[in-house]
Image (cartoon, rainbow, N blue to C red; front, side, top):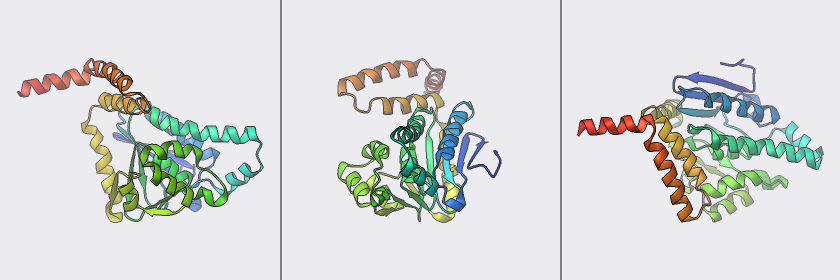
Length: 256
């Protein structure tokens, strides 16, 4: 485990890599240091052979409230080039989440707002506690969740996405599940245990098959039907040649 005073905590817990936003006094708000730390932790987790899933959570009562006040002050006074570099750093985080070979799971307790909601949405799976709240309030201060929209548009319908980002309202965990923003909602009282049970379920799956499936799912986004099928052929062949697949088939045939 990293120094407990660091803004990002990283630990390997058996088959899980745990990444914790550790600024509870600031509702785990994002800044350049936090974003850089998240990227480093994701890369470190991806290098661990034992890891089957990565869980991102927030210390304290909230998951993440978005950009902190100092980050907003910097944005307000930054040059075009500086703002572009800052935005690109966040873009790199979102891309990295998809490039990591194992599932990245957001465990959301409390509020996930603005960039914090974007971070959760960028993860492969979102698990929420009963009392969790989600929202994109950027429009209220003249800001646009521009990169987040590329992810949100792929998670929910066009009209729901429009409503979320132009009205700036918060939605409950159950509402977020209904519209496709959240995968599962668990009781507040058993949330940590439920998240642990859910994510450790990946131990039973083939790591190579999950990695190939994740890569293919995002790779075919935007492809024409025939091209997506052709890409599927290539991945199918690769999967057949893996040790996991060959051992799995051999074991299945032996049972029969």
